[in-house]
Every structure is written in structure tokens, then in C-alpha cells.
Length: 218
Image 1 (cartoon, rainbow, N blue to C red):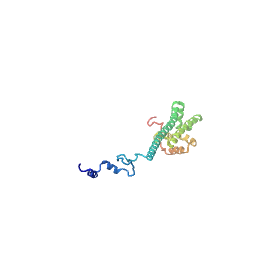
Image 2: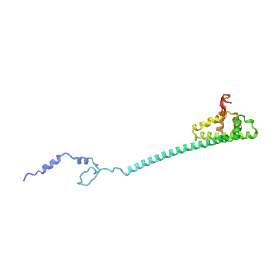
Image 3: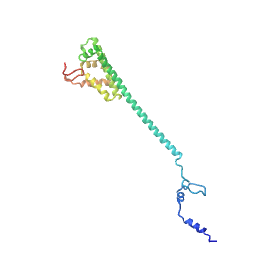
Image 4: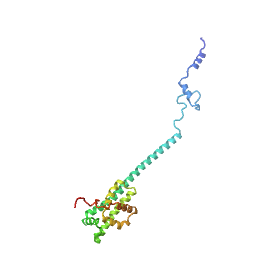
């Protein structure tokens, strides 16, 4: 029988370089316990990927994002609702303003009273004077509605500009000013100050062109 070489083989195994499994075993969690005799594996001692605490935090983040999305949606809805409300308020005020104009235009007798009254309110007989006074009062009331809606922020500057220009020009007629002087105590204080300021700013000359005047024509 030849010499026993088991001792030599044992020494050779001890001198062999460590393999991949040994590296993995060296990197394993020192607190990880496995049954004796079980070889080290890459997944032997991995910690759980997500704990219950991680799931809790993730759920909180998702809930917060959902709340933010809901608030953004509500903000957009409120914005659209506000825009629609402003548009509706302006349309209602303009509709009343147009109704007065159409009423005067469609009624020949009322048109005659309006045309004469803007120039000389005091030349009327009592009946026609009262009719002109009432129509002009409605005109100022509709203007006041547009003014207050605009001041309240429910009507844009662009929508109120045309009314302000037209109504302001009508203040140049002496008959309109006469009715305003007689009836202005029935209007809102802010609107009274607004109209009075416009009347004071009217130039005192005969060269200004009024809404119902046509320069160069008799």
C-alpha cells in the first residue's frame, strides 16, 4: 500500500484561495443565525426589503399627494366658478342696460321725450318731465349696478370700460345732470361720488362732442 496522502490533501485544501461563497459569507449579517452545517448562500441573511414602518411612511406620502391633488382640483373648480359668476353678473347688468336702450329705441314717443329731455329737462310739461325723469333714473340705476359689480370684483375692467365711457359721455347733457341733481340721494354713496367726479371733470366748452351729436351736420 502506498503512503497515506490524506494529510497532504487537507493541507492543500487549507491553502486554496477562498471562493465566491466565502466572500458572500464574510459579508453576511453577523447577527444572522443559520443551522449548523448549512452552506452560506447569497440570500441566506438578507434583511426584509420593506418593513411595516416603511409601508406606513409610504402610505402617508401617498395620502399627502392625494390631498394636494384634491386641493388643486378644488382650486381649479373655484376659479372656474368665480369666472363664470363674474361673467354672469356682468351679463345681467348689461342686459338691463340694453333693455332701457331698446325700450327708448322701440317707442317713438319715449324716444322723442328722451331726445328733448337730454337737452332741456325744464322745457317739459309735468307729464313728459316725469316720464323722462323715471327713464333717466332707471339709466342711472343700471349704471350703478355695473359700477358696484365692478367694484366688488365680479366684473373685469374690460367689461365695465365701455359702459363707463358711454354713461360718462351722457353726463355732458344738461338734462341728464338735472335729473342726477334731483335724484342722486337715492343711490349708493360710492356711486354718487363716482358720478359727481365725472361731472366735475367735464370740460366747460362747446367743442366737446356728445353721444347724440353729429359734428358737421345740421
